[in-house]
Image (cartoon, rainbow, N blue to C red):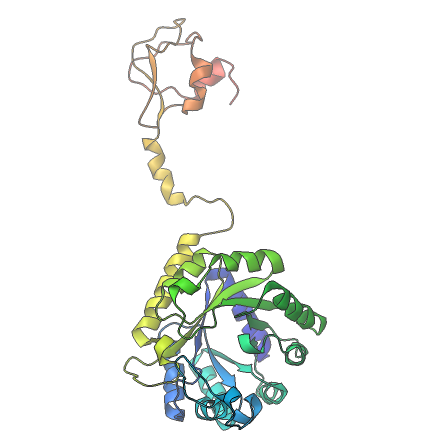
Length: 355
């Protein structure tokens, strides 16, 4: 039942607004209370869902001091991989309570599993949707395992070429995945504006015929907002508390008020984008009176020809539309008409001019 309710919610959210995922990741800093505060922060500031990451250091890598396992640049330069993941992971013992807490607040919660055991663990918690991380996207055995749950998948595509994405989607569909969302992602932490090509969103949508969003690791809201204009239906951003100074992902995380600003901006842009049909709001109707239309500029007697001297196309729009002007010119007036009066549709009927 939880899965059905979530899918209905996701469907309605996609219909009415962009779906906003707040990624907690490692910004809990190993503090359970902080993890709960981050969930509450996401809820208060308008996120549609919060996301966890489910792994242990041992399921991510092996404990080794060889050079291959040392991070040589970036935010986490100097860390050994096992050491980093051991500090950054969300303890499995927290998950059940974090799921319960999020549900009690009325915000959706799901996770990224990084190996088969994490999938089995999350299935026991009735995790309603799964995210596949960019770095795991090419692990097709893991993709197969997750897809066999037949739950919706969100797949980040950082570093991947179109062939790799196609292979992942093929395995996912073959193993039961029917609801797939791709996230365009630049796997730099943080990402610079110059790293992005937002046209990739349209390319992914056109090629794979599925929902597409963005997993944005830049340090402000510009990319996410512009992504919506490019067709993004899902936005994922890392989050932190307003006063939070530390966190493994703090350099590319939105803080409390920034989260609310993004939510508000998402809703404004989504509303401005409108519908996928050519559409004019009815509020514009009142402005039609300021269009041009056909008016008399001289008194015209019955039988007198309409000419450029006695008819003009001018503002306002109370008369016939301009498209009838050339069809009326040189016709004889069927009645007396005073100057500065709009011609109306009765004239067309009398002149036997089709609408």
